[in-house]
Amino acid sequence: MSKIAIVGTGYVGLTAGACFAHLGHQVICYDIDKEKIDKLSNGQIPIVEKGLETLVKEGLEENKLSFTSIPEEAVSECEVIFLCVPTPQRSDGTTDISMVDSAVSSIAQILPENSILVNKSTVPVGSAKKVIEGLNRPDIEVVSNPEFLREGTAVDDFLKPERIIIGSKNPDAAQIVAELYKKIEAPLLITDPISAETIKYTANAFLVTKLSFINSIAAVCEGVGADITDVIKGIGSDSRIGEKYMRPGPGWGGSCFPKDTKSLIHMAGQAGYNFRFLDTAVAVNEEQFDRVVQKIRTAVGGELEGKIVAVWGLTFKAGTDDLRDSPSLAVIKRLHEEGAAVTAHDPTVGQHKEGIPEQVTISKEPLEACENANAVVLLTDWKEYETIGPDDVTDRLADLNLIDTRNVFNPKEWEDKGFTYQGIGR
Ligand SMILES: NC(=O)c1ccc[n+]([C@@H]2O[C@H](COP(=O)([O-])OP(=O)(O)OC[C@H]3O[C@@H](n4cnc5c(N)ncnc54)[C@H](O)[C@@H]3O)[C@@H](O)[C@H]2O)c1
Image (cartoon, rainbow, N blue to C red; front, side, top):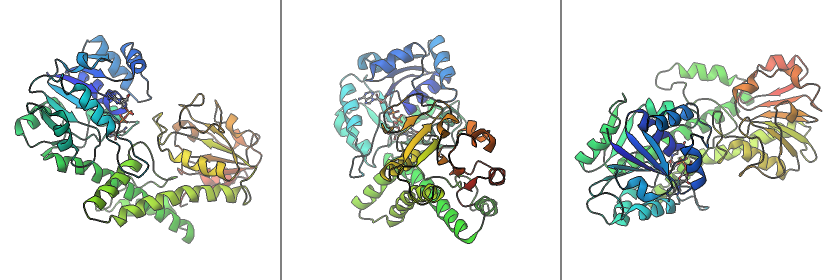
């Protein structure tokens, strides 16, 4: 079993750390956020992620997992050090790797001799080379090991991945990193760092393309009177196509898809290729937010000014508390721009927090959010909304309008009770 350090204890770093400890390794997680580290040291999880708290507690109890805000404590005795720091988007669409640079410079001189630095952050293609230059430590191997976990199912995705990608030009270093995953049964691809970095961007670009594609087909379905659910079933049974990631919705978002897509478009441009295809996937997505607002506008009579809209769900998907680039917030922004008032509920949002506009009124209960609203819009498919029926909200709403952007409700059940129902592509 190996001694592993994790640098950056967020959605990826904490999951990786807790899972590596669960696999039997000795793991120490480091973060510059001292408050987060103090909480974690006491077994308190700062994020919502199924199964993670159990693993963190298990790791702490078995002395396999520890937390620190002191870099020396984290890395000085480790053989493998994972970088899991954020790589956000700059305003011009390029990737800001300053946090990678600063994490690398904070540990460059204290990394043990001949240790391996593994980059799990999603970084622009060619970054491994830049990290090597920044380190200026010829004894250290830099390996790329992109992460594919999804928030909401992060623990499962980490422990049962569909593949493990390791990018290194040094077969010994690649083998040491591969050994860390020995207990996990998954196809392993060892490649060069540039290809490993490209695989991560390609995967996300393909997924957003699928989502934009199916949202476009949903728009066609609405126009011609077809039912998207059956269309998906019909095409999905073709093994060349499949049903996965073919669910229409309010548009895609989250902490990775938007920034990684923009980053790939930019990288392609730098490499001399105009990636028009991905430009269109992004444009279709922006259009999807507009289409959702159009549905709400139509429901309330053509004018949003002065109307009250109840929103169910603020996070970018169910199962996470992550609000970064949430489609729900993109829709809310547009509603505010047109003069509507928004009352919102989300199971992970008890009060205002960073990212949610001040004007949004936060409700503690989904039904409470509907009070006097002219329409209710489901934007995140939290399971608890599925059990709400028309009788639960009729007396609270000012007008009986439901916009179901995740197609979770039965239209007939709501229409029979006098509601105007609008889904996506049905
Ligand atoms: N979130 C996902 O679903 C996901 C999936 C795959 C890949 N990724 C990639 O993984 C990386 C991390 O994403 P995340 O969502 O876990 O980020 P996050 O914001 O949840 O966590 C990052 C952590 O790094 C810490 N940090 C920042 N600078 C640091 C430094 N210099 N030293 C130590 N700690 C530092 C922050 O305090 C924070 O706790 C990104 O590159 C992202 O694109 C994310």
